[in-house]
Image 1 (cartoon, rainbow, N blue to C red):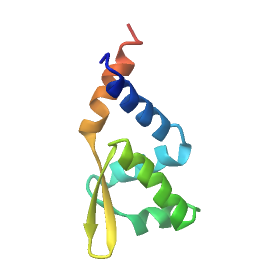
Image 2: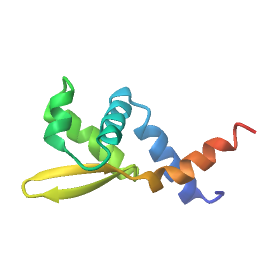
Image 3: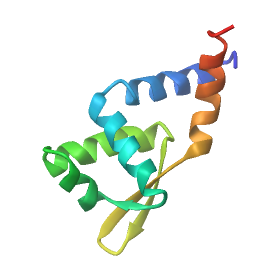
Image 4: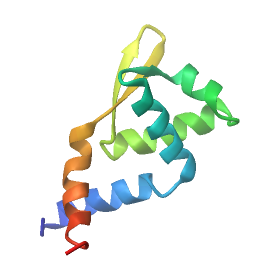
Amino acid sequence: MNNSTDLKRIGRISKALSDPYRIKIMEAIKKQQGWMQCTAIVEMFDLAQSTVSHHLKQLVDADLLYTEKDGRCTRYKVNREGFGDYVDFLRKFER
């Protein structure tokens, strides 16, 4: 992982995970063990729908969530593969 594209991706993931609400959103979706609708996520947190949508967009842009349209709703699922390079990057620091 030496090229600048990989490092930019690591930066996007780090930025996406730097917000406590985004981490909580990721945890909530993971606990669901499948797809979770945006409305269910909004109901879990004391945040405006637009704020939750912003957080979700950051997580999707970092390839940490899959997104799928379900009629007029959007639902989300954790992209486990999206974490692979990031975890590998972090493991370099534990040696």
